[in-house]
Structure formats: C-alpha cells, structure tokens
Image 1 (tube, rainbow, N blue to C red):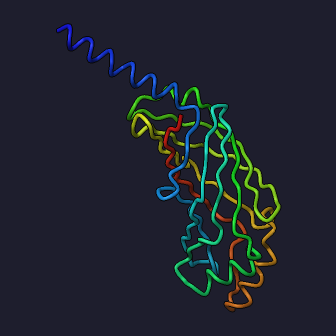
Image 2 (cartoon, rainbow, N blue to C red):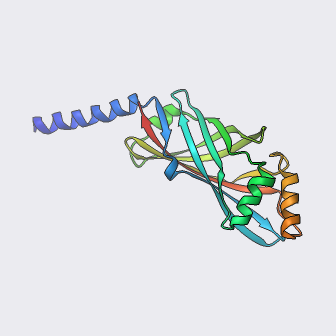
Image 3 (cartoon, rainbow, N blue to C red):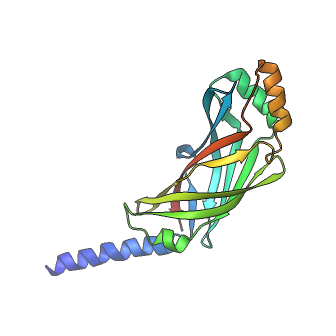
Length: 194
C-alpha cells in the first residue's frame, strides 16, 4: 500500500514538474494548418490551406505564429502560382500574433479543455489586420495541447491589401466574381518546451 502511495505521489510530482517547467510551448508545424475558403462566380465554394512554419507560446502568454505563404494549396497548380505572384506579390511569410492565458492553459489536465477569447493581429504584406475569435484549447497529453478556432474568423481582402490581386485573378480566370471576405480556420498543435 505504501509503495502504491509513493508511486502515485511520484507520478503526480512528475506531472506538476512537467507543467511548471513548460515555460514555453513550441508548435508542431507538421501537424498545424491554416484553412481558408473562397467563393467564385457567386456559388462555387472552394477550400484552401496554408502550412505553418513555426510558432511559440511564451510563458507570458505571447503567441507568435509564422505562416508559410509559399505553401498555399488551392488544388490547382496554376492558381497556386497566380496567387503567389499576383495576390501575395511573391511574399513568402505572414505573422499571427496574439496573447493567451497560459496559467489557465497550463492548469488543464489531460483530456480537459477550455474556450477563450483571443485578440491579435495578422500581419500580411505589411498590413496589420485585427483578429478577434474564440479558441478551443485541449490538453491532449501532459506535454501537448491542441488549439483550434472555435468560431469562424473572417478576413477582409480590402483590409489585407489584396483587392488588386483578386481583380487580376478574376481577369485571368474570366470570372465574374470572387468573394472579398475569406472564412479562416486554425488548427495548431503545441508541445511543451522547458
């Protein structure tokens, strides 16, 4: 009985030490993705993705995520190229910054989750776009959390400074319309790093 108590105490201490030592969280870029949608010709919806280069959550709650614009995937090669050239002006990265309550996040037990409001900025082509959304955070392991958008984020092409590029895409593809507000979803995996 005493051995069992000591073992349970040791396991609990190890878990608490792991959580306390997790001053920063580092993104698993291979398991993280940004999705966004568009609608052309008023009725044809399409889903697209961007990979994440890197990301961290500091002990003070500062979130910094680097997006790989060159990884844009629309499932049509020529469109990928045109977006890179005419919409993104051959820029290769964008940055998402925000802050989260790391004390509450670190207090989550494995399998527990929380929903939190996040305010931040998306920096794209030199433009800072305010970001407001609810995020779902779940601790999937002692040293890992899943962070996803819990509500839809919409990005205005005018705010992003890409309207002229969208006009060029429409002309090249002989389209009557491409929506000027893009729905965006986020899925991030962060691993604890002491």
